[in-house]
Image 1 (cartoon, rainbow, N blue to C red):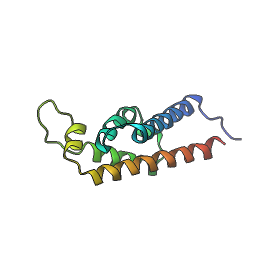
Image 2 (image 1 turned 120 degrees about the horizontal axis):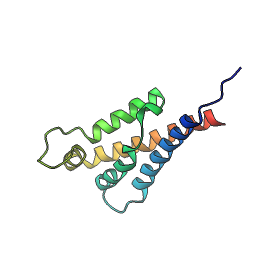
Image 3 (image 1 turned 180 degrees about the vertical axis):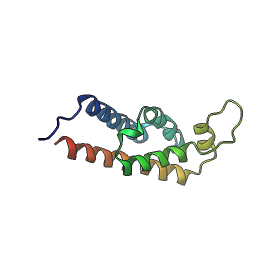
Image 4 (image 1 turned 45 degrees about the horizontal axis):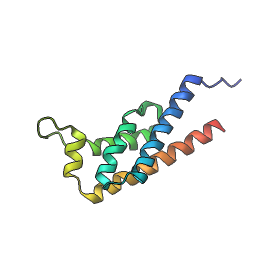
Length: 116
């Protein structure tokens, strides 16, 4: 006999999908440079609990976040995200944005397969 899915877990996973979608939408619609769009997309990404993501997607997500916040040496008062984006090449920012788009799509597909 199949167990009923936990409604709280389903709600949390849908919330994560919503936040990933919001981050992708920010990348697509924000009127600034790619680095500024990544900075704006970081806000909804901060609300995503990686533990809700399937392991393969979680690894990609965590790697992406590490790449967005990799600079440990930064001026006083500047966060890791700002310091990293300041020093980041445009091509790296594009690669991270592309990865975010891919992660969002993979997760949406994974959810559809489980909720259908």
